[in-house]
Image (cartoon, rainbow, N blue to C red):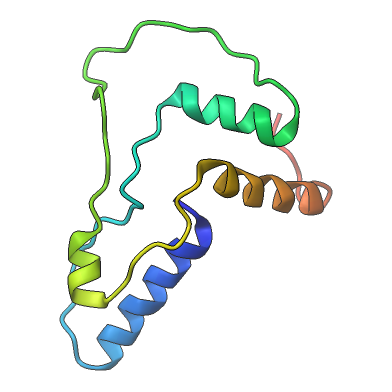
Length: 108
C-alpha cells in the first residue's frame, strides 16, 4: 500500500471523528496481494539492483495469501486507495530513501 494512501485514510478517519462519527478499527489495503518474491522483483526493477535473497520453504503458520479488504473504510469513511501499482509504490519509497539516506543514522 502506498504511504500517501495510508495518510489519506488517517485524514479521512480524523474528519469522520470530527464530524461526530464513531471510533472504529479499519483494515487498509489496496486489494492487491503481493508475494515476497513479487516485492523483491519490483525492488530490483525500480532500483536497478537485484535484491540478494535465498529461497526457502514457507514457515509453519505463514498464510499462502493475505489481502487486506478496505471495504469498511470505503463504506464508513468514503476512502479508497489511489495507487495500486507495486512499482509505483516501491518507486516512491526508493526516491524518498535516496533523498534522505544521509539524514538519518543507519542501523548496522
